[in-house]
Length: 313
Ligand SMILES: [Zn+2]
Image (tube, rainbow, N blue to C red):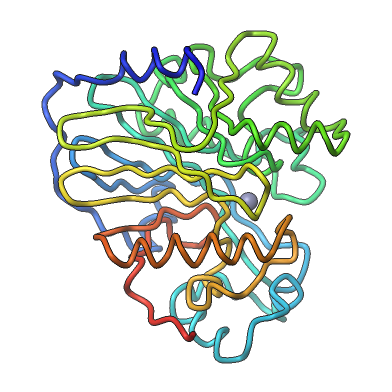
């Protein structure tokens, strides 16, 4: 953890604001599609799903998840029927989440596919609509205090920094695992680092963190990052907990419902499929033990109960 994040944790902690309503919204996929957002409460925190984009993947589902059995696909179809397009197409959402913080302001988890000229334009449905979604939800970009990037893939950092290098969230610190940046540096990356990391370093807004970090506290709850490597080396997820409920914003620990019904199913674009499998299995097993909702980036419904679907193995 850096000093900046420690200071920020202090500033966001010790909430004096009244608790948000503890009611739980269980949005239907249709309702989410209609509004572009859905909200769930975990104690003093509210987690708002923000749909940036939707579109078909460039590979058929059976190529992206070549280890899945017909039984896996049957289970996945039951969980997330809208992900199945014609001729084996995988239809996926590109989703971000805002967390309303009881001390004021918001944390944003992931930043979608970005504008038309963003690096994700090579394969993802750009432009995304995150900025409109924020406006519709009543979130001013100036009130975003933290942007947590689960990992540095194009479809997750798109609205971090504009194509000319200006951060979209002027008052936010951008939280990325140090391992994620180090892996890109070691690989000699010349796309992601200059596009998103260097501009954030220049403005002093980059916060590199190591492992578990508490980002905010409220009465009866907290928001933390946890390392969830495999999809990328420094992948992290965000745990929002309060009043006995947990919402885990998974990033790409699972990208399709087929990995929810069978955590051993690998995804073609995981950096290390064995590590990713282990991470997915332990996250899901842990989630089943508590009252946990998974807040996913790419399923066609933003919130799914971790224990609602029987595992095969
Ligand atoms: Zn992704």
